[in-house]
Image (cartoon, rainbow, N blue to C red; front, side):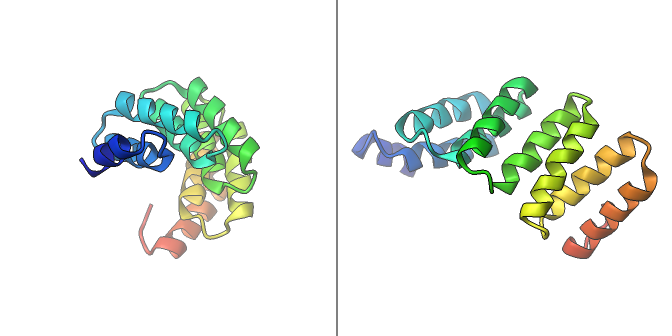
Amino acid sequence: QDYDRAIQIDPQFAEAYYNRGIAYSDLGDHQRAIQDYDRAIQIDPQDAHAYTNRGNAYSDLGDYQRAIQDYDRAIQIDPQLAAAYSNRGVAYSDLGDHQRAIQDYDRAIQIDPQFAEAYYNRGLAYKALGKTAQAEADFKKYEELTGQKP
């Protein structure tokens, strides 16, 4: 409701659309989230995070190609956005392209060596490729960073 009010007051407030999109995603309403991310991007086409989150919503709907397009755009805007690489890696893994996913996880980890989720996801990709030693090393690093078993 606060985001709705903020948008009523200032329909050009991109951050309100962005935050409401996050709220819709958290509620599982990915279509409405995408609509809000569309509006945020329309207002601020250089918002890499809005592209990343819209990609996440597309990914949640199983539209991995559209998700990858959004992650590509986010990376084009902000080449240091580790989450965009990691999320694009997840989309590639979901499409069965684990080798390409590993390249994205590698880049995410290069940017942010403490990015536990990237280690975990890279471990899953290695496991899918039958590379057990690399998978176990990544799962161990994930556990070191989070204190949780994968």
